[in-house]
Image 1 (cartoon, rainbow, N blue to C red):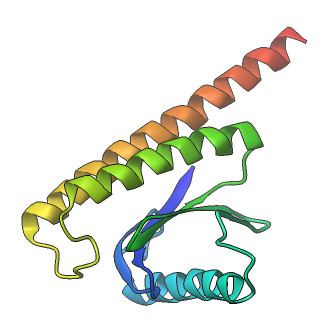
Image 2 (cartoon, one colour):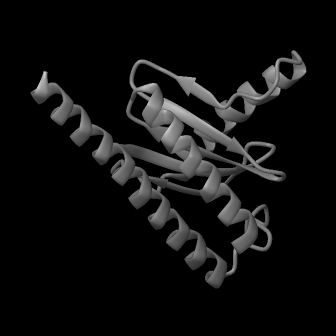
Length: 147
């Protein structure tokens, strides 16, 4: 399940977010999370290790896709590597669509039309990801029942 989607600028400022939690309008939580991810990316870059594309914790997997001026972060339940690969492909598609559909994602003052487009793209992305995860779960149950 997808728990949250964040779009942040390269300095860690949240530009757009959607969370499944009850506090989904809490900008403080989004700002703190975005700052932590930005700090991790900065540390890795300063150490010349490169950029993180995934962070895993006991409770969540966090997938990151970095574009030219922004990054998209998706917080999901832990899942198998094949599901992450499929979700990463969908994340890349989503990031590319956002890059092309929204003129200036980094402009924090998105006009209403752009905000609506971003919400539509996010809805489509969530639907596609949930379908990937549901298909994987159904396949796993079928495979388990055959053995």
